[in-house]
Image (cartoon, rainbow, N blue to C red; front, side, top):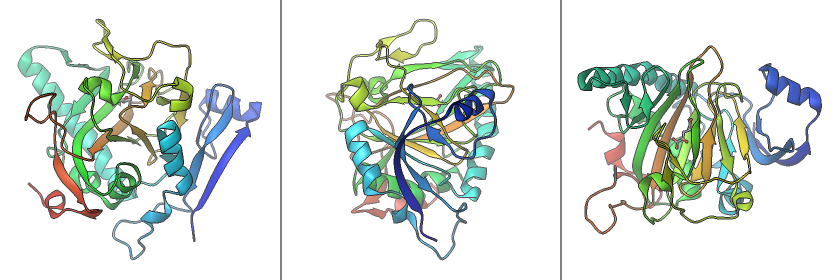
Length: 311
Ligand SMILES: O=C(O)CCC(=O)C(=O)O
């Protein structure tokens, strides 16, 4: 059955708004703007795909409208597109990586490493090779399809990061461009934020600020928040658009797109897994030293063998 791509800008009724705020499971997920207007493209999947099936439908997932939204506003979302098997791999990786982070905190005698805070919020970066089978997702057909649609036919894994917010403790994450953490001009790369759990306003989902709302699509200077360690790049009044999406969805945005996330006020952990791909290796400004990773992924649009073989 072909997937249906819808673009809608629909005023939503108050019943729907109540459902969002009460945490009632939603029949359909969406980005909601502040004025309660839905304004994004939705790829509807009749069911989750199996891994390794005969079907190769990936090109159907990303429409011309998604591509245009990425150009115009710096983001798009794909709902329920992560195959079940990969979602399970990502979930299993969470406990494993948090355990490693605790071991490292213990070793250093601290409860705070970079922007991770023990028992509250974890940002576990560049550990994809540690967690069993995680690379299968990182270098999957799905990631390849998103890369081709956003940064083109050359792609390198630049960064990966687990972002887990503990129940009732998970603190918010400030407005930033991912490029703000890099801190120097670069050819934009793409961030693929995967919802590992159902995402709600209450559990601290991610919010994006479309280019057209921010009024800017270039890198801005970020300022470090001394309390959280977060870098902050937007101080305006816009609140952005929250990603109220089911587990298995992707929020795809540019390294120049402002985004943030809320606090987790629920009694369950909220998990997201982020991978970033660049169209070329990124070196620290004025040096030949890589800023982060540069694992070859796509070459002329094809998945490179290097990325599929275990290191
Ligand atoms: O999942 C989140 O809380 C947001 C993560 C984020 O903004 C980032 O990793 O840049």
